[in-house]
Every structure is written in structure tokens, then in C-alpha cells.
Length: 168
Image 1 (cartoon, rainbow, N blue to C red):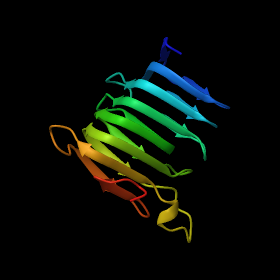
Image 2 (cartoon, rainbow, N blue to C red):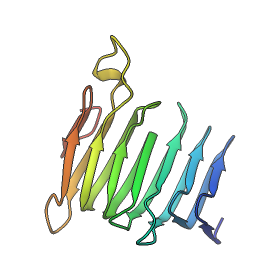
Image 3 (cartoon, rainbow, N blue to C red):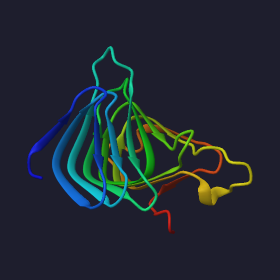
Image 4 (spheres, rainbow, N blue to C red):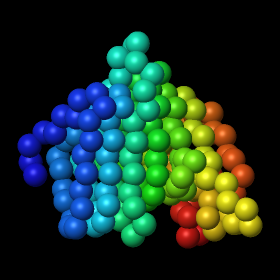
């Protein structure tokens, strides 16, 4: 789809049963993007938030599904973006808080270039007896010109990898 997609506050975009590609998606605070099966590819994905808003947006993919983004911008410093499932991004920029995993699902986020500033909190749901294989992963191949500008917090059974992949 070559048209621009604008998601208003609290709205959602859901894809299922196929492989879909979008050029540009702009999402306001509280927006939800979910892939139930198949893949969703987005050239440019930008989250925005009003200075007064402090809502959480979510990018979620079900088991076996994936979301791939060329340029992901989590713009606002008071915005929270939560990841669940598998998400990859060529570039990840912006400010604010990134939550990798939630109370209900782990996440794997793979980034080629990280130039985000703010907080990255990597933490899966707690399940008794589940080890690192059920944890959340955040990998960054490189950082932007300002170096690692985010504060990274790694919770139990979670991994932050710089210069490698989850498989390595």
C-alpha cells in the first residue's frame, strides 16, 4: 500500500493472513500495531505524543509472525513504546521509554542502528522454571553518532546484545 496511514490516539492497525507492506505510518500516543499472522513491513513508522499525553503504544506480533521496519522513530520523550513478539528495525531513533516484553509476552527486537535516547527496559513475563530461552532480547548492530545514548535496563532472563544477533 503506497498511501500514508495515520493512526489517531488509541486507534489500532491489525494485519492477519498474509504479508503486507506499507510506506509510511504515523501513530499517535496509545496506538496499537498488531500482526496476528504473516508479516508487516513498514518503510517509515513514527510515533508521536503530545507533551501532556503519557500513554503507551504497542507493537505486537504473534508467535510465528513478524514486523519489519526500515525507520522506526519513537519520537516523544514522555512516550512509552512497548514491544511484544518479533520486531526488527533498520534504524531506531527518538526519545522516551522502550519496553521490550510485557507482563504477558516476551519480545525480540533486532536493530541495525540504534540512535534512541531515553530508557530501554528489557523484561519478559515471569514464568517459574523458564530460563533465558523464554526471555526478551534486544540486539543492536551499531549505535548512532552520539554513541549509546539510552539507559539500558536488563531484567531477569533478558539479554542486550551490542554488535551481534540473538542467534550468535
